[in-house]
Length: 103
Image: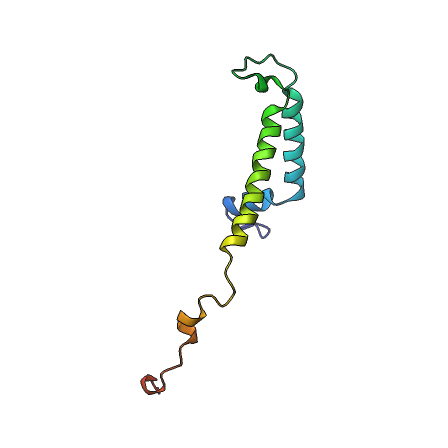
């Protein structure tokens, strides 16, 4: 058996690849290529705004930005203090000494 064999699963290798700077660079190049390709073909838009080259890239970026802002605002509204559940937490109850097993 090969001593250098990596026992990580294929899924774990894909997750490691996605988080690498090389994967990010490939994604940036791919997105830039698709943006440039948007100028190279004739579209048949339903709405006039779809005629703008790169419309869907700009629209997608705007939607992601709106989601991030909404998540930040919603997180501020829903955020609870660190000890929010402490009064009802099991760990905050005193240990019952009489039911402790000595053995």
